[in-house]
Length: 121
Image (cartoon, rainbow, N blue to C red; front, top):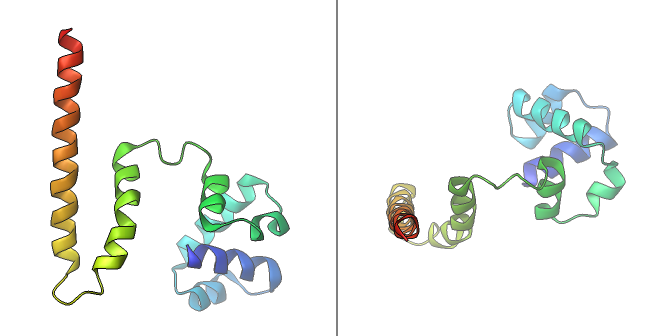
């Protein structure tokens, strides 16, 4: 999220090239180009965009249907807990990945059984 804001800020306030922006923001040139493309297609003025929160920026740039995929929505919901757990001693990304996968499998199996029950009625 910080990279998106930084890329858009550098694009709108400086005369840097995509390569220079990518080095400054720490993202690849294709990512910078993708951010620019999404920003241009949105048609939102930078002044308005700079006043929004990070979540609002993503919603405005990606549209309201950005999180319709339930897998993406569950991953995004899991990120805050990852950020608090990861700095702890003994916690690895792999451990968190397994916890996430276990949680999503349980949610998926619960949803599928509920769907089956509704279909039977």
